Length: 259
Ligand code: BTN
Image (tube, rainbow, N blue to C red; front, side):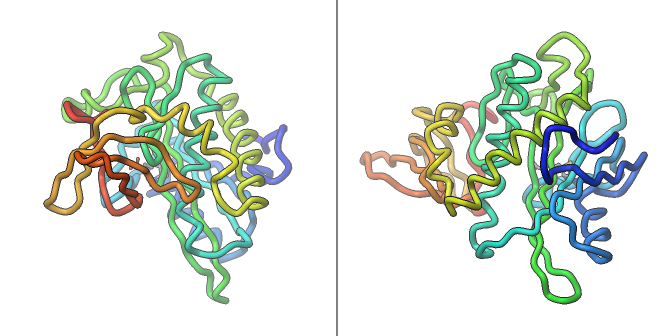
């Protein structure tokens, strides 16, 4: 794929591989040579695609977009997790704009279309040999997958299955890059997610719904409200008392299934 056309820094340099272990790993290898803000690594297939919390991520060829971007941000390390929510917002918008499908967000960063997860993100922080910090944002979008193995069938879906037609991956990458750059630049300017709360919450599939919050071996039932400016999930407990749930620590599920 050629450099993106509608962006200033996202995907201006692209490393496109037939196959790699994980595009997140490939960004790290690239970073050991040079830090390039916006460098995009795309692979047609990953042999060791990684998901959040140690899960693996199915990344067969001709079934999805497997890509990672290198970000060299000028901000405090503790703000990095918010980038995942920025990316979720961009992915939801890109799917809506380029395919006309309604995309919802399952907090913090799963994209849901037709009640199936079609896209996930994995943000990792790292430092190069000189101690310069950078972030690897990996995005997996199930575009043209026609089926999923039985253990994923109830959870995963593809855009092609939702739309009933093949998805133009290059157009979707272009749209994602444009949207991500827009939201990311504002995030850096503002320093938190206050500028995006309303839009994010209007896409939040859990809003107003009961969620099971799985924290280690504890499971609590809350009613989700929305995110705050740090990207934490605000939820009410059985006494109507508001709690904030930090991402990374917990897994949020619907009462009767994944969503
Ligand atoms: C999740 O929802 O658990 C996160 C999935 C992230 C998958 C993408 S695919 C491209 C990049 N490379 C990886 O190994 N993982 C991310």
